[in-house]
Length: 279
Picture 1 (cartoon, rainbow, N blue to C red):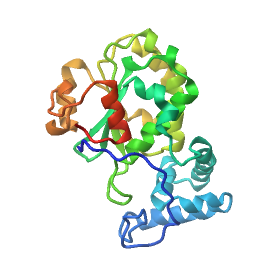
Picture 2: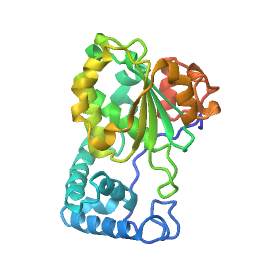
Picture 3: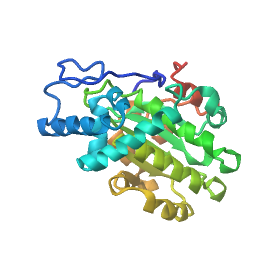
Picture 4: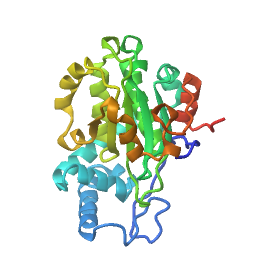
């Protein structure tokens, strides 16, 4: 929710898409996908752009994700897209989130972004016990969620090259009530579902303590039906087998029985997030 060098998320302005045979710049290829679906994408663009001209800066693949998130209902997809277009410049006035705006979150080393699964999806490893709600500022945490999602999306191939989603492992080893952050969880969930639709492929929840289920019961009703299916609880006895089925040994961190080295220090996590090259 796999190379050791990850490009940093940057602001990208994309021109209005056209029927192009080359999509390295985000334009759609003639032979890419279902013609009927692309016709709906064009309709979604026309409806949305009439209300917000900023829609012209979003490529066809972005519109297709919003369309799919609303089961190809043009009206619902347009409403979702308009909300995103209003949110985007407010959340990222510079086009991206600067490191300085999430410095406290970065310093906690609560996640690592390294490697890909067997389907070529970028992997994100989240360590729940490194999140301390008593120390966090909710606005900064929201910015951090956007920062991480943008950095993850930046690790994907160019639009139209087959992969638009990422996968994640949420490791809850050592998680207790002091780490529970319902407001933070709901904020992250809202950002992902509302503004990054059809980006998450699946999340493996591992080393899940019994006490976590109380928090899960509170959060679960706020997860949309499509996303609910993407959360996979993995029993300890099945951990290595499940992750190895999803991720090649060379791409799987050593802590899960693979061969990929991940430095657990906070500074290394910052390097992984911001795209600095591994030592």
